[in-house]
Image (cartoon, rainbow, N blue to C red; front, side, top):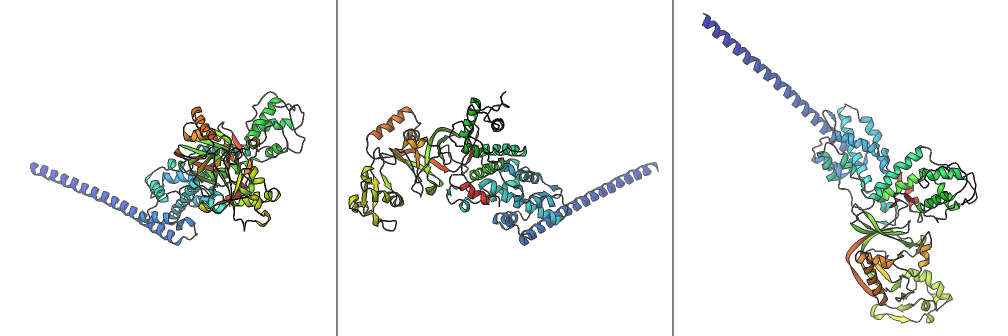
Amino acid sequence: MSGISLTFLFMTKSMTDFFCNVKVLFLVSLLFSASAQADTSWATQSSRDLAQLLKSNPERIQEFNEPAVVAFYREAKYKPLWSNEEGRLNRAYDLLYVIIHAEDEGLVPSDYYLTEIKKYWDTNVPRESSHLDLLLTAALFRYSNHVYSGRSNPRELDADWHIHNKPLEMQKLFADVARKKSITQLLKELPPQHPGYQLLKKELRRFRELEQQGGWQRFGSAPTLETGMQHAQVVPLRQRLEFTGDLVEGPLRDIDIFDHELAEAVRRYQLRHGLEADGRIGPQTRRTLNISAAKRIQQIRLNMERWRWMPRKLGKRYLMVNMTGFELYIMQNGSAVLAMPVIIGKAYRSTPSFSGLISTMEYNPYWTIPANMAVEDFIPRLINDASFLEKKSIKLYRGWGENAREVDPQTVNWNQLDKEHFPYWLRQDPGPKNALGRVKFLFSNPYEIYLHGTPDKHLFDRVVRTFSSGCIRVKDPVRLAAYLLNDGSQQMEEEVLTNIHLGTNQSMTLPVAVPIYLVYWTAWVGQDGKVNFRRDIYGRDRQLSRVFDN
Protein backbone atom coordinates (compact mmCIF):
# COMPACT_ATOMS: atom_id res chain seq x y z
CA MET A 1 0.00 0.00 0.00
CA SER A 2 2.63 2.44 1.01
CA GLY A 3 4.64 1.73 -2.17
CA ILE A 4 1.60 2.24 -4.33
CA SER A 5 0.78 5.45 -2.53
CA LEU A 6 4.29 6.81 -3.04
CA THR A 7 4.21 5.87 -6.71
CA PHE A 8 0.81 7.45 -7.13
CA LEU A 9 1.93 10.63 -5.39
CA PHE A 10 5.05 10.81 -7.54
CA MET A 11 3.04 10.34 -10.74
CA THR A 12 0.46 12.90 -9.59
CA LYS A 13 3.16 15.48 -8.85
CA SER A 14 4.90 14.86 -12.17
CA MET A 15 1.68 15.20 -14.09
CA THR A 16 0.80 18.38 -12.17
CA ASP A 17 4.21 19.89 -12.97
CA PHE A 18 3.80 18.87 -16.61
CA PHE A 19 0.43 20.53 -16.97
CA CYS A 20 1.68 23.64 -15.16
CA ASN A 21 4.57 23.89 -17.58
CA VAL A 22 2.25 23.44 -20.53
CA LYS A 23 0.00 26.18 -19.16
CA VAL A 24 2.96 28.56 -18.77
CA LEU A 25 4.17 27.86 -22.29
CA PHE A 26 0.67 28.41 -23.61
CA LEU A 27 0.36 31.77 -21.84
CA VAL A 28 3.80 32.87 -23.06
CA SER A 29 2.83 31.83 -26.57
CA LEU A 30 -0.34 33.90 -26.34
CA LEU A 31 1.62 36.92 -25.15
CA PHE A 32 4.14 36.66 -27.98
CA SER A 33 1.35 36.14 -30.45
CA ALA A 34 -0.50 39.20 -29.16
CA SER A 35 2.68 41.24 -29.27
CA ALA A 36 3.40 40.10 -32.83
CA GLN A 37 -0.14 40.94 -33.83
CA ALA A 38 0.20 44.36 -32.21
CA ASP A 39 3.49 44.97 -34.09
CA THR A 40 1.97 43.87 -37.34
CA SER A 41 -1.10 45.97 -36.72
CA TRP A 42 0.93 49.12 -35.93
CA ALA A 43 3.32 48.66 -38.83
CA THR A 44 0.55 47.83 -41.28
CA GLN A 45 -1.63 50.75 -40.24
CA SER A 46 1.32 53.17 -40.35
CA SER A 47 2.30 52.00 -43.82
CA ARG A 48 -1.26 52.36 -45.08
CA ASP A 49 -1.57 55.86 -43.61
CA LEU A 50 1.77 56.95 -45.02
CA ALA A 51 0.98 55.66 -48.49
CA GLN A 52 -2.46 57.28 -48.50
CA LEU A 53 -1.25 60.65 -47.14
CA LEU A 54 1.69 60.74 -49.53
CA LYS A 55 -0.63 60.12 -52.45
CA SER A 56 -3.47 62.46 -51.45
CA ASN A 57 -1.25 65.25 -49.99
CA PRO A 58 -4.23 67.04 -48.41
CA GLU A 59 -2.21 70.12 -47.36
CA ARG A 60 -0.48 70.40 -50.74
CA ILE A 61 3.01 70.20 -49.25
CA GLN A 62 5.51 70.54 -52.06
CA GLU A 63 8.01 67.98 -50.77
CA PHE A 64 5.38 65.20 -50.72
CA ASN A 65 5.56 65.30 -54.51
CA GLU A 66 9.36 65.27 -54.74
CA PRO A 67 10.55 62.14 -56.59
CA ALA A 68 13.25 61.48 -53.96
CA VAL A 69 10.69 61.50 -51.13
CA VAL A 70 8.19 59.31 -52.99
CA ALA A 71 10.91 56.86 -54.05
CA PHE A 72 12.31 56.58 -50.54
CA TYR A 73 9.00 55.65 -48.92
CA ARG A 74 8.06 53.31 -51.74
CA GLU A 75 11.36 51.41 -51.50
CA ALA A 76 11.04 51.29 -47.69
CA LYS A 77 7.51 49.84 -48.12
CA TYR A 78 6.16 52.96 -46.41
CA LYS A 79 7.84 52.17 -43.12
CA PRO A 80 7.95 55.29 -40.88
CA LEU A 81 11.33 57.01 -40.81
CA TRP A 82 11.04 58.95 -37.57
CA SER A 83 9.11 56.74 -35.13
CA ASN A 84 8.17 53.22 -34.13
CA GLU A 85 5.45 51.74 -31.93
CA GLU A 86 7.24 53.09 -28.85
CA GLY A 87 7.29 56.70 -30.05
CA ARG A 88 9.69 59.17 -31.65
CA LEU A 89 13.16 57.95 -32.55
CA ASN A 90 16.30 59.83 -31.50
CA ARG A 91 16.91 61.06 -35.03
CA ALA A 92 13.56 62.86 -34.95
CA TYR A 93 14.74 64.84 -31.91
CA ASP A 94 18.04 65.58 -33.69
CA LEU A 95 16.22 67.01 -36.70
CA LEU A 96 13.81 69.03 -34.57
CA TYR A 97 16.72 70.61 -32.68
CA VAL A 98 18.45 71.64 -35.92
CA ILE A 99 15.26 73.13 -37.34
CA ILE A 100 14.62 75.13 -34.18
CA HIS A 101 18.19 76.49 -34.42
CA ALA A 102 18.15 77.10 -38.20
CA GLU A 103 18.84 80.78 -37.49
CA ASP A 104 22.41 79.75 -36.60
CA GLU A 105 22.89 79.07 -40.33
CA GLY A 106 21.22 82.33 -41.34
CA LEU A 107 18.00 80.50 -42.20
CA VAL A 108 14.41 80.79 -40.91
CA PRO A 109 12.99 77.96 -38.71
CA SER A 110 9.41 78.51 -39.89
CA ASP A 111 10.48 77.55 -43.41
CA TYR A 112 10.82 73.96 -42.25
CA TYR A 113 7.25 73.22 -41.09
CA LEU A 114 8.17 73.90 -37.46
CA THR A 115 4.65 75.00 -36.46
CA GLU A 116 3.06 71.95 -38.06
CA ILE A 117 5.63 69.58 -36.57
CA LYS A 118 5.03 70.95 -33.06
CA LYS A 119 1.29 70.53 -33.58
CA TYR A 120 1.61 66.78 -34.16
CA TRP A 121 4.70 66.05 -32.03
CA ASP A 122 2.90 64.62 -28.99
CA THR A 123 0.08 62.90 -30.86
CA ASN A 124 -0.84 59.27 -30.25
CA VAL A 125 -3.33 59.10 -33.11
CA PRO A 126 -1.87 56.74 -35.76
CA ARG A 127 -2.85 58.83 -38.80
CA GLU A 128 -1.54 62.04 -37.22
CA SER A 129 1.69 60.23 -36.33
CA SER A 130 2.04 59.27 -40.00
CA HIS A 131 1.40 62.87 -40.98
CA LEU A 132 4.18 63.93 -38.61
CA ASP A 133 6.54 61.41 -40.20
CA LEU A 134 5.95 62.96 -43.61
CA LEU A 135 6.33 66.50 -42.25
CA LEU A 136 9.69 65.61 -40.72
CA THR A 137 10.83 64.12 -44.01
CA ALA A 138 9.66 67.23 -45.87
CA ALA A 139 11.53 69.39 -43.36
CA LEU A 140 14.69 67.32 -43.81
CA PHE A 141 14.39 67.60 -47.59
CA ARG A 142 13.94 71.37 -47.56
CA TYR A 143 16.42 72.20 -44.81
CA SER A 144 19.20 69.98 -46.16
CA ASN A 145 18.86 71.46 -49.64
CA HIS A 146 18.80 75.02 -48.30
CA VAL A 147 21.78 74.63 -46.00
CA TYR A 148 23.77 72.64 -48.55
CA SER A 149 23.24 74.54 -51.80
CA GLY A 150 21.29 77.67 -50.89
CA ARG A 151 17.85 78.82 -49.89
CA SER A 152 17.50 80.47 -53.28
CA ASN A 153 18.51 79.50 -56.81
CA PRO A 154 21.43 81.77 -57.78
CA ARG A 155 20.53 81.55 -61.46
CA GLU A 156 17.15 83.11 -60.73
CA LEU A 157 18.40 85.80 -58.34
CA ASP A 158 21.78 86.91 -59.63
CA ALA A 159 22.29 86.97 -63.37
CA ASP A 160 26.01 87.57 -62.79
CA TRP A 161 26.63 84.53 -60.55
CA HIS A 162 27.97 81.57 -62.54
CA ILE A 163 29.68 79.40 -59.90
CA HIS A 164 27.90 76.10 -59.39
CA ASN A 165 27.69 73.72 -56.46
CA LYS A 166 26.74 70.11 -57.12
CA PRO A 167 23.21 69.31 -55.89
CA LEU A 168 22.79 67.25 -52.75
CA GLU A 169 22.21 63.52 -53.33
CA MET A 170 18.88 63.20 -51.54
CA GLN A 171 18.47 59.45 -52.03
CA LYS A 172 21.82 58.87 -50.34
CA LEU A 173 20.92 61.28 -47.54
CA PHE A 174 17.63 59.48 -46.84
CA ALA A 175 19.42 56.13 -46.81
CA ASP A 176 22.04 57.46 -44.38
CA VAL A 177 19.35 58.88 -42.09
CA ALA A 178 17.43 55.58 -42.08
CA ARG A 179 20.57 53.70 -41.01
CA LYS A 180 21.49 55.94 -38.08
CA LYS A 181 19.97 56.24 -34.63
CA SER A 182 21.44 59.72 -34.23
CA ILE A 183 21.87 62.10 -37.17
CA THR A 184 23.45 65.03 -35.32
CA GLN A 185 26.81 64.66 -37.08
CA LEU A 186 25.16 64.05 -40.44
CA LEU A 187 23.19 67.30 -40.17
CA LYS A 188 26.26 69.17 -38.93
CA GLU A 189 28.17 68.24 -42.08
CA LEU A 190 25.52 69.62 -44.47
CA PRO A 191 26.49 73.34 -44.33
CA PRO A 192 29.72 74.50 -46.01
CA GLN A 193 32.77 73.61 -43.96
CA HIS A 194 34.86 76.36 -45.57
CA PRO A 195 36.46 78.65 -42.95
CA GLY A 196 34.89 81.63 -44.72
CA TYR A 197 31.40 80.31 -43.98
CA GLN A 198 32.10 79.05 -40.48
CA LEU A 199 33.67 82.35 -39.41
CA LEU A 200 30.68 84.29 -40.73
CA LYS A 201 28.45 81.95 -38.75
CA LYS A 202 30.26 82.96 -35.55
CA GLU A 203 29.91 86.63 -36.44
CA LEU A 204 26.20 86.15 -37.10
CA ARG A 205 25.78 84.85 -33.56
CA ARG A 206 27.81 87.75 -32.15
CA PHE A 207 25.87 90.41 -34.05
CA ARG A 208 22.57 88.88 -32.99
CA GLU A 209 23.70 89.13 -29.39
CA LEU A 210 24.64 92.77 -29.98
CA GLU A 211 21.23 93.42 -31.48
CA GLN A 212 19.48 91.77 -28.51
CA GLN A 213 21.43 94.09 -26.22
CA GLY A 214 19.99 97.08 -28.08
CA GLY A 215 22.48 97.47 -30.91
CA TRP A 216 24.15 100.86 -31.10
CA GLN A 217 23.05 104.45 -31.27
CA ARG A 218 23.10 106.58 -34.39
CA PHE A 219 25.46 109.51 -34.83
CA GLY A 220 23.68 112.69 -35.86
CA SER A 221 25.06 115.44 -38.05
CA ALA A 222 28.27 116.99 -36.74
CA PRO A 223 31.53 118.46 -38.00
CA THR A 224 34.24 116.08 -39.09
CA LEU A 225 35.78 114.68 -35.92
CA GLU A 226 39.57 114.44 -35.83
CA THR A 227 42.55 114.36 -33.49
CA GLY A 228 42.55 117.14 -30.91
CA MET A 229 38.85 117.97 -31.14
CA GLN A 230 36.48 118.04 -28.18
CA HIS A 231 32.92 116.99 -28.98
CA ALA A 232 29.90 115.37 -27.33
CA GLN A 233 30.01 112.48 -29.86
CA VAL A 234 33.51 111.39 -28.83
CA VAL A 235 32.37 109.41 -25.76
CA PRO A 236 29.67 107.42 -27.64
CA LEU A 237 32.21 106.92 -30.43
CA ARG A 238 34.63 105.36 -27.95
CA GLN A 239 31.87 103.10 -26.68
CA ARG A 240 30.93 102.09 -30.20
CA LEU A 241 34.50 101.21 -31.19
CA GLU A 242 34.91 99.22 -27.98
CA PHE A 243 31.67 97.48 -28.90
CA THR A 244 33.07 96.42 -32.29
CA GLY A 245 36.54 95.55 -30.99
CA ASP A 246 38.42 98.37 -32.74
CA LEU A 247 39.28 100.18 -29.50
CA VAL A 248 40.66 98.49 -26.42
CA GLU A 249 38.88 99.75 -23.34
CA GLY A 250 41.08 102.21 -21.45
CA PRO A 251 41.01 104.78 -18.65
CA LEU A 252 39.97 107.57 -21.05
CA ARG A 253 36.66 106.00 -22.10
CA ASP A 254 34.64 108.90 -20.57
CA ILE A 255 36.86 111.67 -21.96
CA ASP A 256 35.30 113.66 -24.81
CA ILE A 257 38.60 114.59 -26.47
CA PHE A 258 39.50 112.90 -29.77
CA ASP A 259 43.00 111.59 -28.98
CA HIS A 260 45.59 109.63 -31.00
CA GLU A 261 44.47 106.29 -29.58
CA LEU A 262 40.93 106.93 -30.76
CA ALA A 263 42.22 108.00 -34.19
CA GLU A 264 44.06 104.66 -34.51
CA ALA A 265 40.88 102.81 -33.56
CA VAL A 266 38.98 104.79 -36.23
CA ARG A 267 41.62 103.77 -38.81
CA ARG A 268 41.15 100.12 -37.90
CA TYR A 269 37.40 100.55 -38.27
CA GLN A 270 37.83 102.28 -41.64
CA LEU A 271 40.09 99.54 -42.98
CA ARG A 272 37.49 96.92 -42.03
CA HIS A 273 34.83 98.85 -43.94
CA GLY A 274 36.81 99.67 -47.07
CA LEU A 275 37.08 103.38 -46.30
CA GLU A 276 39.98 105.78 -46.62
CA ALA A 277 41.89 105.20 -43.39
CA ASP A 278 42.45 108.83 -42.38
CA GLY A 279 41.46 108.39 -38.73
CA ARG A 280 38.70 111.01 -38.99
CA ILE A 281 34.92 110.75 -38.70
CA GLY A 282 33.76 112.33 -41.94
CA PRO A 283 30.52 111.79 -43.90
CA GLN A 284 31.46 108.37 -45.34
CA THR A 285 32.64 106.93 -42.02
CA ARG A 286 29.60 108.38 -40.25
CA ARG A 287 27.34 106.76 -42.81
CA THR A 288 28.75 103.29 -42.09
CA LEU A 289 28.57 103.88 -38.32
CA ASN A 290 24.85 104.51 -38.73
CA ILE A 291 24.19 101.18 -40.45
CA SER A 292 22.16 99.23 -37.89
CA ALA A 293 23.08 95.87 -36.37
CA ALA A 294 19.97 94.42 -38.06
CA LYS A 295 21.27 95.45 -41.49
CA ARG A 296 24.70 94.01 -40.74
CA ILE A 297 23.02 90.76 -39.72
CA GLN A 298 21.21 90.66 -43.05
CA GLN A 299 24.46 91.39 -44.87
CA ILE A 300 26.16 88.47 -43.11
CA ARG A 301 23.22 86.19 -43.95
CA LEU A 302 23.36 87.11 -47.65
CA ASN A 303 27.05 86.27 -47.81
CA MET A 304 26.52 82.98 -45.99
CA GLU A 305 23.99 82.22 -48.72
CA ARG A 306 26.61 82.91 -51.39
CA TRP A 307 28.99 80.54 -49.63
CA ARG A 308 26.30 77.85 -49.92
CA TRP A 309 26.35 78.44 -53.68
CA MET A 310 30.06 77.57 -53.76
CA PRO A 311 31.49 74.11 -54.54
CA ARG A 312 32.29 72.04 -51.47
CA LYS A 313 35.81 71.37 -52.75
CA LEU A 314 37.70 74.44 -53.93
CA GLY A 315 41.07 72.75 -54.31
CA LYS A 316 44.22 72.57 -52.20
CA ARG A 317 45.61 75.54 -54.11
CA TYR A 318 43.46 78.15 -55.79
CA LEU A 319 43.01 81.84 -56.51
CA MET A 320 40.13 83.84 -55.13
CA VAL A 321 39.28 87.35 -56.24
CA ASN A 322 37.02 89.16 -53.79
CA MET A 323 35.55 91.87 -55.95
CA THR A 324 34.12 94.21 -53.32
CA GLY A 325 37.37 93.97 -51.33
CA PHE A 326 39.41 94.62 -54.50
CA GLU A 327 41.83 91.87 -53.46
CA LEU A 328 43.26 88.71 -54.98
CA TYR A 329 44.38 85.84 -52.76
CA ILE A 330 46.38 82.73 -53.50
CA MET A 331 44.97 80.15 -51.10
CA GLN A 332 46.92 77.10 -50.06
CA ASN A 333 45.55 74.52 -47.60
CA GLY A 334 42.93 77.00 -46.43
CA SER A 335 45.27 79.97 -45.81
CA ALA A 336 46.25 82.94 -47.94
CA VAL A 337 49.93 82.76 -48.96
CA LEU A 338 49.72 85.85 -51.16
CA ALA A 339 47.38 88.83 -51.35
CA MET A 340 47.45 91.77 -53.72
CA PRO A 341 45.17 94.64 -54.79
CA VAL A 342 43.12 94.33 -57.97
CA ILE A 343 40.97 96.54 -60.18
CA ILE A 344 37.58 95.23 -61.32
CA GLY A 345 34.87 96.23 -63.79
CA LYS A 346 33.00 99.51 -63.77
CA ALA A 347 29.42 99.47 -62.52
CA TYR A 348 28.03 99.41 -66.08
CA ARG A 349 30.57 96.75 -67.12
CA SER A 350 30.48 94.74 -63.92
CA THR A 351 32.66 91.69 -63.50
CA PRO A 352 30.53 88.53 -63.11
CA SER A 353 31.07 85.89 -60.43
CA PHE A 354 32.36 82.67 -61.97
CA SER A 355 35.08 80.06 -61.72
CA GLY A 356 37.60 78.61 -64.11
CA LEU A 357 41.08 77.10 -64.44
CA ILE A 358 44.15 79.23 -65.07
CA SER A 359 46.15 77.10 -67.45
CA THR A 360 48.30 79.50 -69.49
CA MET A 361 50.01 82.86 -69.15
CA GLU A 362 51.34 85.21 -71.78
CA TYR A 363 54.38 87.47 -71.67
CA ASN A 364 54.16 90.80 -73.50
CA PRO A 365 50.61 90.20 -74.71
CA TYR A 366 48.78 91.79 -77.59
CA TRP A 367 45.45 93.35 -76.70
CA THR A 368 42.57 92.86 -79.10
CA ILE A 369 40.06 95.52 -78.10
CA PRO A 370 36.50 94.16 -77.69
CA ALA A 371 34.16 95.48 -80.39
CA ASN A 372 31.74 97.12 -77.95
CA MET A 373 34.60 98.99 -76.28
CA ALA A 374 36.00 100.05 -79.65
CA VAL A 375 32.64 101.55 -80.59
CA GLU A 376 31.68 103.06 -77.22
CA ASP A 377 35.07 104.29 -75.99
CA PHE A 378 37.36 104.72 -78.99
CA ILE A 379 35.20 106.19 -81.74
CA PRO A 380 34.33 109.36 -79.73
CA ARG A 381 38.06 109.95 -79.15
CA LEU A 382 38.98 109.24 -82.77
CA ILE A 383 36.39 111.73 -84.01
CA ASN A 384 38.29 114.42 -82.13
CA ASP A 385 41.79 113.04 -82.64
CA ALA A 386 42.54 110.65 -85.51
CA SER A 387 46.08 110.15 -84.16
CA PHE A 388 44.76 108.67 -80.90
CA LEU A 389 45.44 105.06 -81.99
CA GLU A 390 49.04 105.83 -82.99
CA LYS A 391 49.73 107.43 -79.62
CA LYS A 392 48.54 104.25 -77.88
CA SER A 393 50.41 101.84 -80.23
CA ILE A 394 47.05 100.52 -81.47
CA LYS A 395 46.63 99.32 -85.03
CA LEU A 396 43.42 99.21 -87.08
CA TYR A 397 42.61 96.13 -89.17
CA ARG A 398 39.94 95.03 -91.61
CA GLY A 399 39.27 91.37 -92.35
CA TRP A 400 40.42 88.33 -90.39
CA GLY A 401 43.10 85.68 -90.65
CA GLU A 402 45.00 85.68 -93.94
CA ASN A 403 42.67 88.36 -95.26
CA ALA A 404 43.43 90.84 -92.48
CA ARG A 405 45.03 94.08 -93.63
CA GLU A 406 46.09 97.12 -91.71
CA VAL A 407 44.12 100.32 -92.30
CA ASP A 408 45.34 103.88 -91.80
CA PRO A 409 43.02 105.49 -89.17
CA GLN A 410 43.41 108.84 -90.94
CA THR A 411 41.51 107.46 -93.94
CA VAL A 412 38.42 106.44 -91.94
CA ASN A 413 35.35 108.63 -91.51
CA TRP A 414 34.72 107.85 -87.83
CA ASN A 415 31.46 109.82 -87.78
CA GLN A 416 29.83 107.19 -90.01
CA LEU A 417 30.62 104.21 -87.76
CA ASP A 418 28.52 102.78 -84.95
CA LYS A 419 27.75 99.41 -83.34
CA GLU A 420 25.58 98.43 -86.30
CA HIS A 421 28.33 99.25 -88.78
CA PHE A 422 31.92 98.69 -87.62
CA PRO A 423 33.84 96.49 -90.10
CA TYR A 424 37.19 96.89 -88.27
CA TRP A 425 39.05 95.49 -85.30
CA LEU A 426 41.75 97.03 -83.13
CA ARG A 427 44.86 95.51 -81.61
CA GLN A 428 47.43 97.06 -79.32
CA ASP A 429 51.05 95.95 -79.69
CA PRO A 430 53.04 94.61 -76.71
CA GLY A 431 55.03 97.13 -74.74
CA PRO A 432 54.92 99.56 -71.83
CA LYS A 433 51.77 101.26 -73.16
CA ASN A 434 49.80 98.03 -73.51
CA ALA A 435 46.62 98.09 -71.42
CA LEU A 436 47.24 94.47 -70.33
CA GLY A 437 50.65 95.28 -68.89
CA ARG A 438 53.47 92.81 -69.39
CA VAL A 439 51.77 89.57 -68.28
CA LYS A 440 48.33 88.13 -69.01
CA PHE A 441 46.76 85.12 -67.27
CA LEU A 442 44.18 83.12 -69.20
CA PHE A 443 41.51 80.89 -67.71
CA SER A 444 38.49 79.06 -69.05
CA ASN A 445 35.32 81.19 -69.18
CA PRO A 446 32.81 82.34 -71.80
CA TYR A 447 33.11 86.05 -70.90
CA GLU A 448 36.56 86.82 -72.38
CA ILE A 449 37.71 87.83 -68.90
CA TYR A 450 41.26 87.27 -67.70
CA LEU A 451 43.81 88.60 -65.22
CA HIS A 452 46.47 91.00 -66.42
CA GLY A 453 48.83 93.74 -65.40
CA THR A 454 48.36 97.43 -66.20
CA PRO A 455 50.51 100.48 -66.89
CA ASP A 456 48.13 102.57 -64.75
CA LYS A 457 49.72 101.71 -61.41
CA HIS A 458 48.43 104.88 -59.75
CA LEU A 459 44.87 103.50 -59.76
CA PHE A 460 45.83 100.97 -57.07
CA ASP A 461 46.13 103.88 -54.64
CA ARG A 462 42.38 104.40 -54.83
CA VAL A 463 40.15 102.81 -52.19
CA VAL A 464 37.33 101.90 -54.60
CA ARG A 465 38.84 100.38 -57.74
CA THR A 466 36.13 99.90 -60.37
CA PHE A 467 37.97 101.07 -63.49
CA SER A 468 38.19 98.11 -65.88
CA SER A 469 35.86 96.89 -68.59
CA GLY A 470 35.29 93.60 -66.81
CA CYS A 471 38.73 91.99 -66.66
CA ILE A 472 40.81 91.87 -63.48
CA ARG A 473 43.92 94.05 -63.31
CA VAL A 474 46.49 92.85 -60.76
CA LYS A 475 49.03 95.09 -59.08
CA ASP A 476 51.99 92.68 -59.14
CA PRO A 477 51.71 90.30 -62.11
CA VAL A 478 55.37 89.29 -61.80
CA ARG A 479 54.90 87.96 -58.29
CA LEU A 480 51.65 86.26 -59.25
CA ALA A 481 53.35 84.59 -62.21
CA ALA A 482 56.16 83.33 -59.95
CA TYR A 483 53.61 81.70 -57.63
CA LEU A 484 51.66 80.12 -60.46
CA LEU A 485 54.81 78.76 -62.10
CA ASN A 486 56.34 77.48 -58.89
CA ASP A 487 56.61 78.64 -55.29
CA GLY A 488 56.89 82.40 -55.69
CA SER A 489 60.61 82.45 -54.92
CA GLN A 490 62.89 85.38 -55.76
CA GLN A 491 64.66 83.20 -58.33
CA MET A 492 61.36 82.50 -60.10
CA GLU A 493 60.48 86.21 -60.12
CA GLU A 494 63.82 86.95 -61.80
CA GLU A 495 63.07 84.31 -64.43
CA VAL A 496 59.70 85.93 -65.12
CA LEU A 497 61.35 89.36 -65.46
CA THR A 498 63.92 87.90 -67.89
CA ASN A 499 61.12 86.67 -70.17
CA ILE A 500 59.37 90.04 -69.96
CA HIS A 501 62.54 91.94 -70.85
CA LEU A 502 62.92 89.89 -74.04
CA GLY A 503 60.03 92.01 -75.30
CA THR A 504 58.55 89.28 -77.47
CA ASN A 505 55.08 87.82 -77.19
CA GLN A 506 55.33 84.37 -75.57
CA SER A 507 52.72 81.94 -74.32
CA MET A 508 53.50 79.52 -71.51
CA THR A 509 51.51 76.59 -70.16
CA LEU A 510 51.44 76.41 -66.36
CA PRO A 511 52.86 73.24 -64.76
CA VAL A 512 49.51 72.70 -63.05
CA ALA A 513 46.20 74.37 -63.91
CA VAL A 514 45.01 76.38 -60.91
CA PRO A 515 41.32 76.97 -60.05
CA ILE A 516 40.20 80.58 -59.77
CA TYR A 517 36.99 81.93 -58.22
CA LEU A 518 35.71 85.45 -58.78
CA VAL A 519 33.37 86.08 -55.86
CA TYR A 520 31.21 88.89 -54.52
CA TRP A 521 31.60 89.02 -50.74
CA THR A 522 30.31 92.14 -49.00
CA ALA A 523 30.94 90.58 -45.57
CA TRP A 524 33.81 88.30 -44.63
CA VAL A 525 36.23 87.59 -41.80
CA GLY A 526 39.84 88.51 -42.54
CA GLN A 527 43.06 86.68 -41.69
CA ASP A 528 43.21 88.74 -38.47
CA GLY A 529 39.86 87.34 -37.33
CA LYS A 530 38.06 90.68 -37.76
CA VAL A 531 34.82 90.96 -39.71
CA ASN A 532 34.90 93.18 -42.80
CA PHE A 533 31.98 94.90 -44.51
CA ARG A 534 31.94 96.50 -47.94
CA ARG A 535 29.62 98.64 -49.98
CA ASP A 536 27.29 96.84 -52.40
CA ILE A 537 29.08 98.26 -55.44
CA TYR A 538 27.08 96.33 -58.05
CA GLY A 539 23.75 96.28 -56.18
CA ARG A 540 23.78 92.47 -55.91
CA ASP A 541 23.08 92.45 -52.17
CA ARG A 542 20.06 94.64 -52.79
CA GLN A 543 18.80 92.31 -55.50
CA LEU A 544 19.28 89.17 -53.38
CA SER A 545 17.77 90.73 -50.27
CA ARG A 546 14.48 91.48 -52.06
CA VAL A 547 13.65 87.80 -52.33
CA PHE A 548 15.85 86.08 -49.76
CA ASP A 549 13.25 86.00 -46.99
CA ASN A 550 10.15 85.83 -49.19
